Length: 190
Length: 284
Image (cartoon, rainbow over all chains, first blue to last red; front, side, top):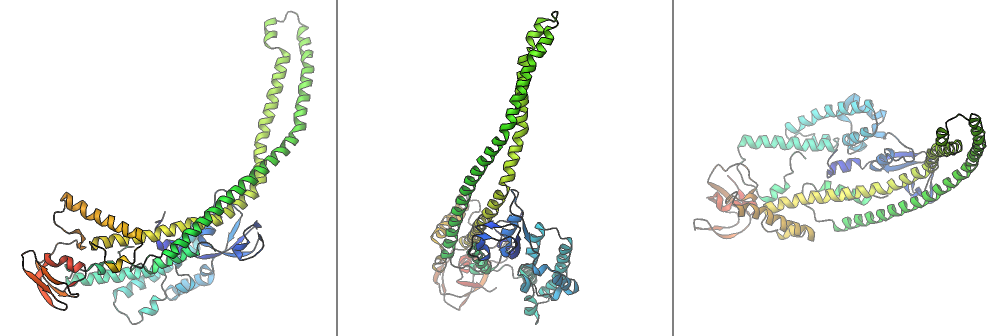
Protein backbone atom coordinates (compact mmCIF):
# COMPACT_ATOMS: atom_id res chain seq x y z
CA UNK A 1 0.00 0.00 0.00
CA UNK A 2 1.39 3.34 -0.98
CA UNK A 3 1.43 6.47 1.12
CA UNK A 4 -2.03 7.91 1.57
CA UNK A 5 -0.67 11.45 1.75
CA UNK A 6 1.59 11.19 -1.29
CA UNK A 7 0.72 14.00 -3.67
CA UNK A 8 2.62 12.41 -6.55
CA UNK A 9 0.68 9.22 -6.22
CA UNK A 10 -2.58 11.17 -6.10
CA UNK A 11 -1.67 13.06 -9.24
CA UNK A 12 -0.55 9.93 -11.05
CA UNK A 13 -4.00 8.42 -10.69
CA UNK A 14 -5.57 11.55 -12.04
CA UNK A 15 -5.53 10.39 -15.63
CA UNK A 16 -8.58 9.97 -17.77
CA UNK A 17 -9.17 6.63 -19.42
CA UNK A 18 -11.69 5.64 -22.03
CA UNK A 19 -14.31 3.27 -20.69
CA UNK A 20 -17.23 1.41 -22.18
CA UNK A 21 -20.08 0.23 -19.99
CA UNK A 22 -21.59 -3.03 -21.17
CA UNK A 23 -25.12 -2.21 -20.10
CA UNK A 24 -27.51 0.71 -19.91
CA UNK A 25 -27.34 2.50 -16.61
CA UNK A 26 -30.17 4.83 -15.63
CA UNK A 27 -29.26 8.15 -14.09
CA UNK A 28 -25.65 8.40 -15.19
CA UNK A 29 -25.91 10.10 -18.54
CA UNK A 30 -24.17 13.20 -17.15
CA UNK A 31 -20.95 11.21 -17.27
CA UNK A 32 -20.88 11.66 -21.02
CA UNK A 33 -22.49 15.06 -20.91
CA UNK A 34 -25.91 13.90 -22.08
CA UNK A 35 -29.25 15.21 -20.92
CA UNK A 36 -31.37 12.07 -20.90
CA UNK A 37 -31.47 9.80 -17.93
CA UNK A 38 -29.96 6.68 -19.42
CA UNK A 39 -26.27 6.11 -20.02
CA UNK A 40 -26.36 3.94 -23.12
CA UNK A 41 -24.49 0.69 -23.21
CA UNK A 42 -21.45 0.82 -25.44
CA UNK A 43 -20.87 4.55 -25.35
CA UNK A 44 -17.23 5.50 -24.85
CA UNK A 45 -16.76 7.88 -21.98
CA UNK A 46 -13.78 9.52 -20.36
CA UNK A 47 -13.59 8.90 -16.65
CA UNK A 48 -10.68 9.32 -14.26
CA UNK A 49 -8.61 6.24 -13.63
CA UNK A 50 -9.22 6.27 -9.88
CA UNK A 51 -12.93 5.91 -10.52
CA UNK A 52 -12.66 3.37 -13.31
CA UNK A 53 -10.43 1.18 -11.18
CA UNK A 54 -12.91 0.99 -8.34
CA UNK A 55 -15.81 0.24 -10.66
CA UNK A 56 -13.91 -2.45 -12.55
CA UNK A 57 -12.55 -4.07 -9.44
CA UNK A 58 -15.37 -4.09 -6.92
CA UNK A 59 -16.24 -7.26 -4.99
CA UNK A 60 -19.99 -6.64 -4.85
CA UNK A 61 -20.38 -6.76 -8.59
CA UNK A 62 -20.95 -3.77 -10.82
CA UNK A 63 -22.06 -3.18 -14.35
CA UNK A 64 -19.35 -4.75 -16.52
CA UNK A 65 -16.96 -2.13 -17.80
CA UNK A 66 -14.23 -2.21 -20.41
CA UNK A 67 -11.25 0.01 -19.82
CA UNK A 68 -9.37 0.68 -23.01
CA UNK A 69 -5.61 0.70 -23.03
CA UNK A 70 -4.61 4.36 -23.08
CA UNK A 71 -3.10 5.55 -26.31
CA UNK A 72 0.21 6.35 -24.68
CA UNK A 73 0.67 2.68 -23.82
CA UNK A 74 -0.23 1.65 -27.34
CA UNK A 75 1.97 -0.16 -29.80
CA UNK A 76 3.27 2.98 -31.41
CA UNK A 77 4.73 4.30 -28.20
CA UNK A 78 5.97 0.88 -27.13
CA UNK A 79 7.85 0.54 -30.39
CA UNK A 80 9.24 4.02 -29.96
CA UNK A 81 10.47 3.20 -26.48
CA UNK A 82 12.05 -0.01 -27.67
CA UNK A 83 13.77 1.73 -30.54
CA UNK A 84 15.26 4.61 -28.57
CA UNK A 85 13.80 5.26 -25.15
CA UNK A 86 15.78 8.42 -24.43
CA UNK A 87 14.24 10.56 -27.15
CA UNK A 88 10.56 9.89 -26.46
CA UNK A 89 8.76 12.99 -25.21
CA UNK A 90 6.91 11.52 -22.23
CA UNK A 91 5.16 14.58 -20.72
CA UNK A 92 3.45 15.10 -24.03
CA UNK A 93 1.97 11.62 -23.74
CA UNK A 94 1.28 11.53 -20.02
CA UNK A 95 3.00 13.64 -17.36
CA UNK A 96 3.16 10.73 -14.93
CA UNK A 97 4.04 8.14 -17.53
CA UNK A 98 5.87 5.62 -15.34
CA UNK A 99 3.99 6.22 -12.13
CA UNK A 100 0.63 5.81 -13.82
CA UNK A 101 2.05 2.67 -15.39
CA UNK A 102 2.54 1.10 -12.00
CA UNK A 103 -1.05 1.89 -11.05
CA UNK A 104 -2.33 0.68 -14.36
CA UNK A 105 -0.43 -2.59 -14.22
CA UNK A 106 -1.84 -3.36 -10.80
CA UNK A 107 -5.21 -3.61 -12.48
CA UNK A 108 -4.25 -5.31 -15.71
CA UNK A 109 -1.88 -8.14 -16.38
CA UNK A 110 0.33 -7.01 -19.21
CA UNK A 111 3.77 -8.56 -19.09
CA UNK A 112 4.72 -6.95 -22.33
CA UNK A 113 3.94 -3.44 -21.16
CA UNK A 114 5.60 -4.02 -17.81
CA UNK A 115 8.88 -5.12 -19.34
CA UNK A 116 8.71 -2.35 -21.92
CA UNK A 117 8.28 0.31 -19.22
CA UNK A 118 10.99 -1.18 -17.07
CA UNK A 119 13.55 -1.28 -19.89
CA UNK A 120 12.69 2.23 -20.98
CA UNK A 121 12.97 3.54 -17.44
CA UNK A 122 16.39 1.98 -16.95
CA UNK A 123 17.67 3.26 -20.27
CA UNK A 124 16.48 6.79 -19.56
CA UNK A 125 17.66 6.81 -15.96
CA UNK A 126 21.25 6.35 -17.07
CA UNK A 127 21.15 9.47 -19.19
CA UNK A 128 19.38 11.45 -16.45
CA UNK A 129 22.14 10.48 -14.05
CA UNK A 130 24.78 11.58 -16.56
CA UNK A 131 23.13 14.97 -16.87
CA UNK A 132 23.04 15.57 -13.12
CA UNK A 133 26.66 14.64 -12.55
CA UNK A 134 28.20 16.58 -15.40
CA UNK A 135 27.13 20.01 -14.21
CA UNK A 136 25.55 22.72 -16.34
CA UNK A 137 25.16 21.22 -19.77
CA UNK A 138 23.98 23.48 -22.55
CA UNK A 139 21.31 21.12 -23.88
CA UNK A 140 19.87 20.26 -20.49
CA UNK A 141 16.59 22.13 -20.75
CA UNK A 142 15.63 20.39 -23.92
CA UNK A 143 16.38 17.10 -22.28
CA UNK A 144 14.49 18.05 -19.12
CA UNK A 145 11.37 18.73 -21.14
CA UNK A 146 11.23 15.11 -22.15
CA UNK A 147 11.30 13.73 -18.61
CA UNK A 148 8.20 12.56 -16.80
CA UNK A 149 7.47 13.59 -13.21
CA UNK A 150 9.26 10.67 -11.58
CA UNK A 151 12.35 11.28 -13.65
CA UNK A 152 12.27 14.94 -12.77
CA UNK A 153 12.26 14.05 -9.10
CA UNK A 154 15.24 11.81 -9.68
CA UNK A 155 16.95 14.54 -11.65
CA UNK A 156 16.48 16.92 -8.72
CA UNK A 157 17.77 14.32 -6.30
CA UNK A 158 20.80 13.80 -8.53
CA UNK A 159 21.53 17.51 -8.65
CA UNK A 160 21.17 17.78 -4.90
CA UNK A 161 23.53 14.90 -4.28
CA UNK A 162 26.17 16.26 -6.60
CA UNK A 163 25.81 19.65 -4.89
CA UNK A 164 26.23 17.94 -1.52
CA UNK A 165 29.40 16.25 -2.70
CA UNK A 166 30.67 19.62 -3.90
CA UNK A 167 29.90 21.16 -0.50
CA UNK A 168 31.65 18.36 1.27
CA UNK A 169 34.72 18.83 -0.87
CA UNK A 170 34.72 22.50 0.04
CA UNK A 171 34.21 21.64 3.71
CA UNK A 172 31.52 24.25 4.02
CA UNK A 173 29.13 22.18 6.06
CA UNK A 174 29.67 23.96 9.37
CA UNK A 175 27.84 27.05 8.17
CA UNK A 176 24.66 28.08 9.82
CA UNK A 177 21.96 28.74 7.35
CA UNK A 178 19.00 31.03 7.74
CA UNK A 179 15.59 29.53 8.34
CA UNK A 180 14.19 30.61 5.01
CA UNK A 181 17.02 28.78 3.28
CA UNK A 182 16.20 25.69 5.23
CA UNK A 183 12.57 25.95 4.27
CA UNK A 184 13.42 26.28 0.62
CA UNK A 185 15.56 23.22 0.78
CA UNK A 186 13.43 20.27 -0.21
CA UNK A 187 13.48 17.28 2.01
CA UNK A 188 15.68 14.72 0.37
CA UNK A 189 14.23 11.42 -0.69
CA UNK A 190 10.63 12.50 -1.02
CA UNK B 1 -17.28 16.08 -13.26
CA UNK B 2 -16.72 15.42 -9.59
CA UNK B 3 -13.23 15.59 -8.15
CA UNK B 4 -11.98 18.33 -10.46
CA UNK B 5 -11.66 20.96 -7.76
CA UNK B 6 -9.72 18.51 -5.64
CA UNK B 7 -7.39 17.75 -8.53
CA UNK B 8 -6.78 21.46 -8.85
CA UNK B 9 -5.79 21.58 -5.21
CA UNK B 10 -3.52 18.56 -5.60
CA UNK B 11 -1.79 20.19 -8.56
CA UNK B 12 -1.35 23.36 -6.57
CA UNK B 13 0.16 21.42 -3.69
CA UNK B 14 2.58 19.75 -6.07
CA UNK B 15 3.52 23.00 -7.78
CA UNK B 16 4.22 24.79 -4.53
CA UNK B 17 6.05 21.97 -2.81
CA UNK B 18 9.21 24.09 -2.64
CA UNK B 19 7.68 27.17 -1.11
CA UNK B 20 4.90 28.07 1.21
CA UNK B 21 1.79 29.43 -0.48
CA UNK B 22 -1.13 31.06 1.32
CA UNK B 23 -3.86 28.77 2.55
CA UNK B 24 -6.30 28.20 -0.30
CA UNK B 25 -9.43 28.75 1.70
CA UNK B 26 -11.90 29.12 -1.15
CA UNK B 27 -10.82 25.94 -2.90
CA UNK B 28 -10.84 23.93 0.31
CA UNK B 29 -14.32 25.21 1.05
CA UNK B 30 -15.66 24.31 -2.34
CA UNK B 31 -14.19 20.82 -2.05
CA UNK B 32 -15.79 20.40 1.35
CA UNK B 33 -19.08 21.51 -0.19
CA UNK B 34 -18.69 18.92 -2.91
CA UNK B 35 -18.03 16.26 -0.30
CA UNK B 36 -21.24 17.16 1.51
CA UNK B 37 -23.17 17.06 -1.73
CA UNK B 38 -21.69 13.69 -2.67
CA UNK B 39 -22.44 12.34 0.75
CA UNK B 40 -26.08 13.33 0.48
CA UNK B 41 -26.30 11.81 -2.98
CA UNK B 42 -24.79 8.58 -1.70
CA UNK B 43 -27.25 8.48 1.17
CA UNK B 44 -30.22 8.98 -1.11
CA UNK B 45 -28.88 6.35 -3.52
CA UNK B 46 -28.68 3.87 -0.66
CA UNK B 47 -32.20 4.70 0.51
CA UNK B 48 -33.54 4.34 -3.01
CA UNK B 49 -31.75 1.03 -3.44
CA UNK B 50 -33.06 -0.34 -0.16
CA UNK B 51 -36.61 0.59 -1.10
CA UNK B 52 -36.36 -0.99 -4.51
CA UNK B 53 -34.70 -4.03 -3.03
CA UNK B 54 -37.47 -4.51 -0.49
CA UNK B 55 -40.13 -4.09 -3.13
CA UNK B 56 -38.55 -6.58 -5.48
CA UNK B 57 -37.82 -9.04 -2.72
CA UNK B 58 -41.40 -9.06 -1.51
CA UNK B 59 -42.54 -9.40 -5.11
CA UNK B 60 -40.28 -12.39 -5.67
CA UNK B 61 -41.36 -13.91 -2.40
CA UNK B 62 -45.00 -13.57 -3.40
CA UNK B 63 -44.37 -15.24 -6.70
CA UNK B 64 -42.44 -17.93 -4.93
CA UNK B 65 -45.30 -18.58 -2.55
CA UNK B 66 -47.69 -18.81 -5.46
CA UNK B 67 -45.43 -21.38 -7.06
CA UNK B 68 -45.15 -23.09 -3.74
CA UNK B 69 -48.92 -23.38 -3.29
CA UNK B 70 -49.54 -26.33 -5.64
CA UNK B 71 -46.53 -28.22 -4.37
CA UNK B 72 -47.62 -27.84 -0.75
CA UNK B 73 -51.09 -29.08 -1.64
CA UNK B 74 -49.49 -32.06 -3.29
CA UNK B 75 -47.56 -32.63 -0.09
CA UNK B 76 -50.88 -32.62 1.78
CA UNK B 77 -52.17 -35.01 -0.78
CA UNK B 78 -49.31 -37.39 -0.22
CA UNK B 79 -49.91 -36.93 3.49
CA UNK B 80 -53.54 -37.93 3.13
CA UNK B 81 -52.60 -40.93 1.08
CA UNK B 82 -50.10 -41.79 3.76
CA UNK B 83 -52.77 -41.43 6.39
CA UNK B 84 -55.02 -43.48 4.21
CA UNK B 85 -52.22 -46.02 4.05
CA UNK B 86 -51.81 -45.74 7.81
CA UNK B 87 -54.78 -47.83 8.82
CA UNK B 88 -53.85 -50.18 6.06
CA UNK B 89 -50.45 -50.86 7.57
CA UNK B 90 -51.96 -51.01 11.02
CA UNK B 91 -54.43 -53.56 9.82
CA UNK B 92 -51.60 -55.56 8.37
CA UNK B 93 -49.83 -55.39 11.73
CA UNK B 94 -53.03 -56.21 13.50
CA UNK B 95 -53.25 -59.21 11.32
CA UNK B 96 -50.63 -60.70 13.56
CA UNK B 97 -52.12 -60.70 17.06
CA UNK B 98 -48.90 -61.98 18.64
CA UNK B 99 -47.10 -58.83 17.64
CA UNK B 100 -45.77 -57.04 20.71
CA UNK B 101 -48.15 -54.25 21.60
CA UNK B 102 -45.44 -52.12 23.15
CA UNK B 103 -43.60 -51.84 19.87
CA UNK B 104 -46.90 -51.04 18.23
CA UNK B 105 -47.54 -48.31 20.75
CA UNK B 106 -44.15 -46.84 20.17
CA UNK B 107 -44.40 -46.96 16.43
CA UNK B 108 -47.89 -45.76 16.08
CA UNK B 109 -48.18 -46.00 12.32
CA UNK B 110 -50.39 -42.96 11.91
CA UNK B 111 -48.12 -40.87 14.05
CA UNK B 112 -45.01 -42.04 12.27
CA UNK B 113 -46.67 -41.39 8.95
CA UNK B 114 -47.62 -37.86 9.90
CA UNK B 115 -44.14 -37.31 11.20
CA UNK B 116 -42.60 -38.44 7.98
CA UNK B 117 -44.93 -36.16 6.12
CA UNK B 118 -43.96 -33.19 8.22
CA UNK B 119 -40.34 -34.14 7.76
CA UNK B 120 -40.82 -34.40 4.06
CA UNK B 121 -42.56 -31.06 3.81
CA UNK B 122 -39.85 -29.43 5.90
CA UNK B 123 -37.20 -31.03 3.74
CA UNK B 124 -38.90 -29.75 0.62
CA UNK B 125 -39.06 -26.33 2.24
CA UNK B 126 -35.34 -26.38 2.96
CA UNK B 127 -34.74 -27.52 -0.57
CA UNK B 128 -36.83 -24.62 -1.81
CA UNK B 129 -35.39 -21.97 0.49
CA UNK B 130 -32.02 -21.57 -1.23
CA UNK B 131 -33.81 -21.48 -4.52
CA UNK B 132 -35.79 -18.54 -3.18
CA UNK B 133 -32.55 -16.91 -2.12
CA UNK B 134 -30.90 -17.52 -5.45
CA UNK B 135 -34.03 -16.41 -7.23
CA UNK B 136 -33.97 -13.20 -5.26
CA UNK B 137 -30.30 -12.75 -6.02
CA UNK B 138 -30.89 -13.40 -9.68
CA UNK B 139 -33.69 -10.85 -9.92
CA UNK B 140 -31.77 -8.33 -7.85
CA UNK B 141 -28.49 -8.79 -9.73
CA UNK B 142 -28.99 -6.05 -12.35
CA UNK B 143 -30.38 -3.70 -9.73
CA UNK B 144 -27.46 -4.36 -7.41
CA UNK B 145 -24.94 -3.92 -10.18
CA UNK B 146 -26.56 -0.68 -11.27
CA UNK B 147 -26.65 0.51 -7.71
CA UNK B 148 -22.99 -0.24 -7.04
CA UNK B 149 -21.91 1.39 -10.27
CA UNK B 150 -23.89 4.50 -9.54
CA UNK B 151 -22.81 4.48 -5.93
CA UNK B 152 -19.15 4.17 -6.84
CA UNK B 153 -19.41 6.99 -9.34
CA UNK B 154 -20.32 9.20 -6.38
CA UNK B 155 -18.41 7.51 -3.62
CA UNK B 156 -14.97 7.34 -5.22
CA UNK B 157 -14.78 11.12 -5.80
CA UNK B 158 -15.84 11.57 -2.20
CA UNK B 159 -13.00 9.38 -0.99
CA UNK B 160 -10.60 11.06 -3.35
CA UNK B 161 -11.64 14.54 -2.24
CA UNK B 162 -10.99 13.48 1.31
CA UNK B 163 -7.61 12.03 0.44
CA UNK B 164 -6.53 15.17 -1.37
CA UNK B 165 -7.67 17.43 1.46
CA UNK B 166 -5.74 15.26 3.91
CA UNK B 167 -2.64 15.28 1.72
CA UNK B 168 -2.84 19.05 1.25
CA UNK B 169 -3.09 19.71 4.95
CA UNK B 170 -0.47 17.13 5.74
CA UNK B 171 1.98 18.87 3.46
CA UNK B 172 1.21 22.22 5.07
CA UNK B 173 1.52 20.86 8.58
CA UNK B 174 4.96 19.50 7.79
CA UNK B 175 5.96 22.95 6.56
CA UNK B 176 4.51 24.61 9.65
CA UNK B 177 6.48 22.25 11.85
CA UNK B 178 9.65 23.36 10.09
CA UNK B 179 8.60 26.97 10.61
CA UNK B 180 8.04 26.30 14.29
CA UNK B 181 11.54 24.94 14.67
CA UNK B 182 13.02 27.90 12.86
CA UNK B 183 11.13 30.79 14.48
CA UNK B 184 10.12 31.42 18.06
CA UNK B 185 7.46 33.83 16.99
CA UNK B 186 5.76 33.62 13.66
CA UNK B 187 6.94 36.46 11.42
CA UNK B 188 4.17 38.67 10.11
CA UNK B 189 4.92 37.71 6.51
CA UNK B 190 4.31 34.03 7.29
CA UNK B 191 1.35 34.74 9.50
CA UNK B 192 -0.61 35.97 6.52
CA UNK B 193 -0.08 32.67 4.77
CA UNK B 194 -1.63 30.56 7.49
CA UNK B 195 -5.27 29.89 8.18
CA UNK B 196 -6.47 30.66 11.74
CA UNK B 197 -6.42 26.98 12.63
CA UNK B 198 -2.90 26.65 11.32
CA UNK B 199 -1.76 29.57 13.46
CA UNK B 200 -3.26 27.78 16.44
CA UNK B 201 -1.37 24.65 15.48
CA UNK B 202 1.87 26.60 15.10
CA UNK B 203 1.55 28.12 18.56
CA UNK B 204 0.76 24.79 20.20
CA UNK B 205 3.52 22.95 18.38
CA UNK B 206 6.10 25.64 19.00
CA UNK B 207 5.31 25.61 22.71
CA UNK B 208 5.50 21.83 22.84
CA UNK B 209 8.79 21.39 21.04
CA UNK B 210 10.57 24.03 23.08
CA UNK B 211 9.09 23.54 26.50
CA UNK B 212 9.43 19.83 26.51
CA UNK B 213 13.17 19.81 26.09
CA UNK B 214 14.14 22.91 28.02
CA UNK B 215 12.01 22.13 31.07
CA UNK B 216 13.28 18.59 31.38
CA UNK B 217 16.81 19.79 30.96
CA UNK B 218 17.47 16.97 28.56
CA UNK B 219 19.44 19.07 26.20
CA UNK B 220 20.60 21.74 28.52
CA UNK B 221 20.94 25.05 26.80
CA UNK B 222 21.21 23.72 23.29
CA UNK B 223 18.85 25.53 20.98
CA UNK B 224 17.18 22.82 18.96
CA UNK B 225 15.83 25.28 16.45
CA UNK B 226 19.11 25.90 14.70
CA UNK B 227 18.75 23.20 12.13
CA UNK B 228 22.33 22.11 12.63
CA UNK B 229 23.13 18.57 13.54
CA UNK B 230 26.90 18.46 13.22
CA UNK B 231 29.06 19.89 16.03
CA UNK B 232 30.54 23.32 15.35
CA UNK B 233 34.23 23.46 14.39
CA UNK B 234 35.09 26.95 15.56
CA UNK B 235 34.20 29.33 18.35
CA UNK B 236 34.37 32.52 16.33
CA UNK B 237 32.83 33.04 12.96
CA UNK B 238 32.61 35.82 10.43
CA UNK B 239 29.15 37.13 9.66
CA UNK B 240 27.80 39.73 7.31
CA UNK B 241 24.76 41.74 8.25
CA UNK B 242 21.93 41.50 5.77
CA UNK B 243 19.26 43.37 7.67
CA UNK B 244 19.77 46.02 10.30
CA UNK B 245 19.33 44.71 13.79
CA UNK B 246 20.65 47.52 15.93
CA UNK B 247 22.80 46.98 18.99
CA UNK B 248 23.10 43.55 20.55
CA UNK B 249 24.43 42.87 24.03
CA UNK B 250 26.46 39.67 23.95
CA UNK B 251 26.88 37.06 26.67
CA UNK B 252 30.13 38.64 27.85
CA UNK B 253 28.46 42.00 28.22
CA UNK B 254 30.01 43.74 25.24
CA UNK B 255 27.81 45.64 22.84
CA UNK B 256 27.76 44.67 19.23
CA UNK B 257 26.36 47.12 16.76
CA UNK B 258 25.15 45.27 13.69
CA UNK B 259 24.64 47.63 10.80
CA UNK B 260 23.64 46.58 7.36
CA UNK B 261 26.46 45.39 5.07
CA UNK B 262 29.07 45.36 7.84
CA UNK B 263 31.14 42.27 8.62
CA UNK B 264 31.98 41.03 12.10
CA UNK B 265 34.16 38.39 13.65
CA UNK B 266 32.05 37.28 16.59
CA UNK B 267 31.43 34.44 18.99
CA UNK B 268 29.29 31.84 17.37
CA UNK B 269 26.85 31.42 20.24
CA UNK B 270 25.98 35.12 20.24
CA UNK B 271 24.67 35.26 16.72
CA UNK B 272 23.39 31.77 15.91
CA UNK B 273 19.78 32.71 16.29
CA UNK B 274 20.19 35.89 14.29
CA UNK B 275 21.54 33.85 11.42
CA UNK B 276 18.66 31.40 11.42
CA UNK B 277 16.27 34.30 11.50
CA UNK B 278 17.90 35.71 8.40
CA UNK B 279 19.47 38.87 9.84
CA UNK B 280 23.03 37.74 9.33
CA UNK B 281 24.85 35.65 6.79
CA UNK B 282 27.46 33.14 7.85
CA UNK B 283 30.43 33.99 5.63
CA UNK B 284 33.25 31.88 7.02
